[in-house]
Image (tube, rainbow, N blue to C red; front, side, top):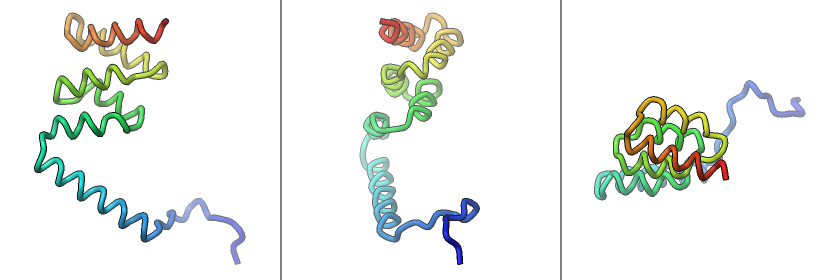
Length: 106
């Protein structure tokens, strides 16, 4: 008889949680098919993890998404902001990254 959780065992997902995640996924797919994908991505960007925000700031396809992601970066992402400035000097993304760096240094 086991007394504790075994870290090697995969976590069991509650059936209600699984249903909720499936509905959320279905709504996202519906929105991507029926709305402007750029607007959907901008809406999702506000609630995403710092890692995904950094990824969007570096590589997002839509300029508006990249600029919004740059504006959302925090102190932990200073290296990403510097990377944007170094890799794309003179671009609107570098200017936005410079402005965000200045804000964070205040």
